[in-house]
Image (cartoon, rainbow, N blue to C red; front, top):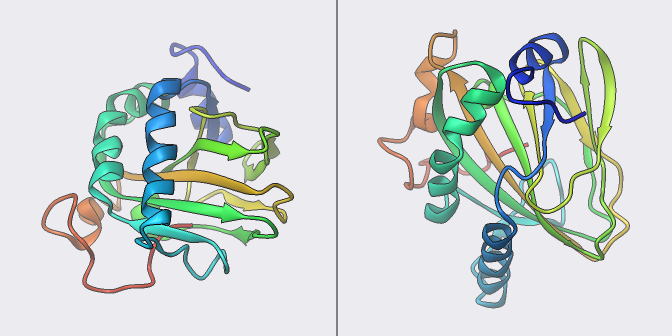
Amino acid sequence: MDHDDDLAPEAFRRQGYIVTAHLIDPALADFFWSYVHTRFASRMLGSGGPLAPGSLGGYGDPAFDGLLEFVRPRIEERCGLSLLPTYSFYRLYRHGNALPPHRDRPACEISVSLNIGQMPGAPWPIHVEGPAGAYAASLGPGDALIYRGVDCRHWRDAYGGDRLVQAFLHYVDQHGPHADQKFDGRRTLMRPRAQAGREAE
């Protein structure tokens, strides 16, 4: 389901989603895996949000907001849009966690679900349903699913592995109806939100 850069914007327009292999290098994925687990060991992880009870995570973390900007040119290239960043979120899924079918809020108009790593190594599919039908994306570390979060339903069945770290990178179309969602109500990236509980999906 991965597409060459020249073909990706048309596939994204037609399907509402595309898979991008190796969005980030393995060494960078390894860094974020270590980063999340260091925060876990330091008891610095919050809730993974109401959609994934029992998971842990973090909103607008400076490292992940930095990643949000780092990959933005590649995401723009893949979906054929000029994008504004809204926020990042990361989640540490554990055995038995699941994600019910849902669509995202306006700040997640263009969403990236990026696999950071998992133990064991078997992929855990993320399901997405767009105009062309449903698809189960099996991602390895560094691979990403780019999708229209406000339009495409997406979900995960119960996780059978031990742990998996996923990053969520959210953007809006600079020329679209949700451009006012830039930074998700914050003055800049890398700052917390005033309201809690509106993390990512």
